[in-house]
Image 1 (cartoon, rainbow over the protein chains, first blue to last red):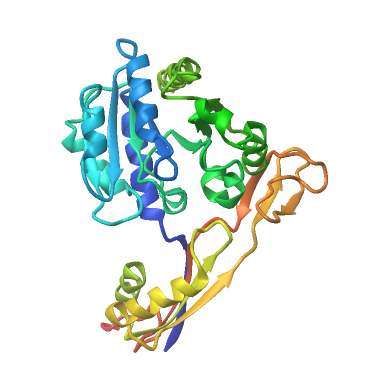
Image 2 (image 1 turned 45 degrees about the vertical axis):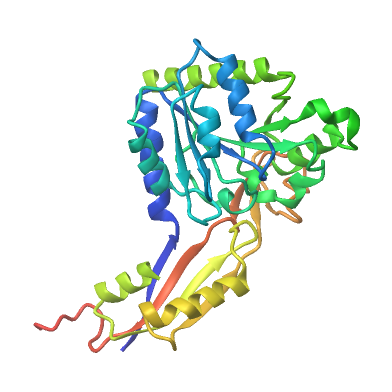
Length: 224
Length: 114
């Protein structure tokens, strides 16, 4: 006897449920989760170094950092913040299971912000909810201002865009306005920052935003 | 495929004949590649002659300003009617398992003990 069983369910439903539970758990303890995504070499780790220096003594930060191999990023960040390297062994993105495990291995510390530095890749990480409150896309001046339109899913699913290496603008044909316009066609609600981890331009504004977002989370948790 | 084999087991299927899935432009899944992956995994989880039906849906949205339903072309999230960018996606961004067609010895709902 032949029967068609109606399922009509998101194939990632189980993973999305776990991500939502992780977000909920950390919300209750007042920890804002940010998922940092970009191409390799955009400056995710450099932004985190500059952020950690700027926010020292103001917010308690922690980092889970994903790479295919090595603990180089964790070594760079270790003098500044509690950090745990997640090595994917070849996988091109992080998934919620790796994040849950990394969070445990980090000792589940009391934090104001947990940064998840994703594997450098503008494609696959877009399809995986890691339990973040905010997805932050980074785009560097050396990559070109035409990138948002080429990777629509990543920019569409982000709430924040951080332009990096802005100190190199004088040497490159990168047009800040063109990049922003391209990104806003895909996601008009993006909060946008222009930064340089070397000169610290834009870092104070970015860090103030982080403080506000963290406060917003704490307030919303208290209200509910 | 694990979901499919779980469903087959739940319903005491003797075989799985067809799996129907939905993909869209923002699913992050390519039709040819998902077919290849399915062919590789089918023999492990169900059987190698199980068919995969891929339903491709376009990117659809709803304009939050003028409340019109719109087709989103070239990932440009702008309402053709009123020009607003306040659009939420209503279709074409999920990777969904739609139907699983199975073969059973007895009609559905009839258990062995009856």
